[in-house]
Image (cartoon, rainbow, N blue to C red; front, side, top):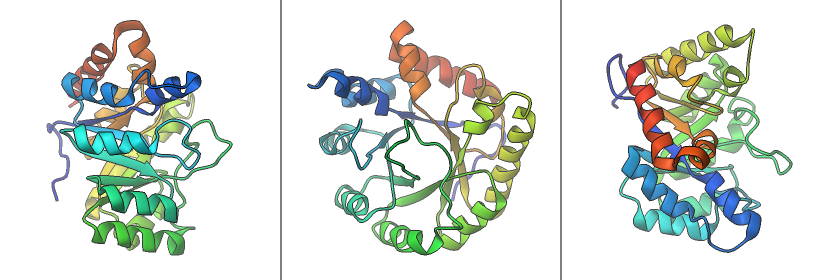
Length: 246
């Protein structure tokens, strides 16, 4: 397994969910999240992330079909650990699946998956996806207990939740250290660490500078910035900040 070390390129995964959110606010087909995904790749995205929620509030099933048919970079399908979602993942077989917690009432993902507490539930899903050749990731808090659970589950990748760092103030240095320690612990135990949630131009540099991280997944901020300067411009600027940090 290839793991990130200091000086290597940090991959950028662009989450296109909120292009679909705008589309669904009015119905119809515009703006098209698949078009946004293709523009993101042109601008330097190394992969595309899409969260197919149970309530289909943004990404739809047909979006996943089109993404699988049209993308030239890996698709990272975010999903809850349900039989419906596992069936969809096994049908499409994306390069990667990131298992995330999901609540109907939340506006966005509020925190990391409790991989330790839900070990028995998660185990068959991780096993089925892995046997199908899908690279499984767990979206977890930067907590040694959760990393240990990911190890026992056999997940080759974790994505560390950066929301508390991104939205913090006085606790931000401590949270940054917690993320760095978790990334180092993951690499030490043969797991590739990614990170994401709430990252912006203003706070991404410190996260991108963590040498063990292999990938950042960023969506809402990039789609929001695209309103002012265009999607390609926002992605290129984020790409430049990430590269400079390495």
